[in-house]
Image 1 (cartoon, rainbow, N blue to C red):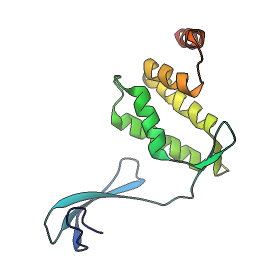
Image 2 (cartoon, rainbow, N blue to C red):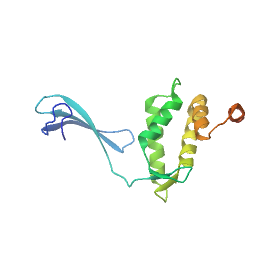
Image 3 (spheres, rainbow, N blue to C red):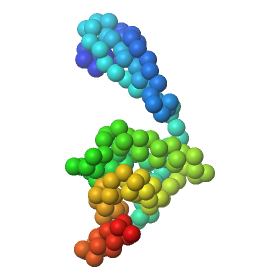
Length: 149
């Protein structure tokens, strides 16, 4: 492992911990040259998932893109980054259990919406407005009425 501070390849593992989801290993490392510490994460490399977009294009699944979309929807709400990370981990795990490595973006959107609906109604509405492509106020109104029922 290369030190991010000085570039030395002389590093050692100081501490190792499994993450809560048991899918990632967190390692604290120390550089033997500059003596600074840094953290690395290891995750099993999985087969790449392919997302089929609404217009038929295909692109590689990007967990960071998923996470940033959820973060944008959750701004100024009480949803913590830990909860958002858990949503991303759960969705990615669920997608990898499917029979196909190709998944429609619509399916991912429904998975996110279901989870946000349980956590925070405002985040759910924000996400749904983009995911379902609300065009006017009536679309918002319909979704809010469904939510209230």
